[in-house]
Image (cartoon, rainbow, N blue to C red; front, side, top):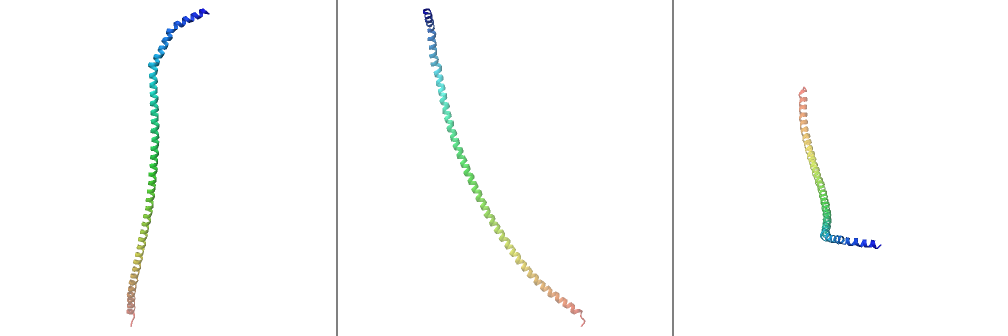
Amino acid sequence: MEAILNSLGGLLLKALPTLALLLLVHFYLKRTFFRPLERVLRARRDATEGVRKLAEHTLAKAAEKTSEYEAAIRAARTDLYLEQEQLRRQFEVDGAASIRAARQSAEEMVKQARAQFVQEAEQAKLSLAYQSEELAGKIAAAILERRPA
């Protein structure tokens, strides 16, 4: 067993420079490669988080503006519908006024036509009365001329 321990001690002695070199490489790589890499990764993660937060903030602002625009569009539509309704009512009032004016005009024309008709009828009666008297006179004259006296 002593021989095994001696040979293990010799192997350990021979492995010490390799172990020291391995530790030296470990600390060298850690200092020159892994620390800068870790700093770069940390900076990248911080930048990514910053951009993510900025994107979330921008998205929230966009959603807010979208809701504002939608509210403005709804208000504009409401105003437009109210204006259209007001115009429709005004057109109804104007149309009713036009109908009343047309009806009054038509009634006035009917009154004038009736008055003219009555006047023409009176003239026709007078004319017929005059013509009938004239015709009666001619008939009487014709009858009187035929009679032998």
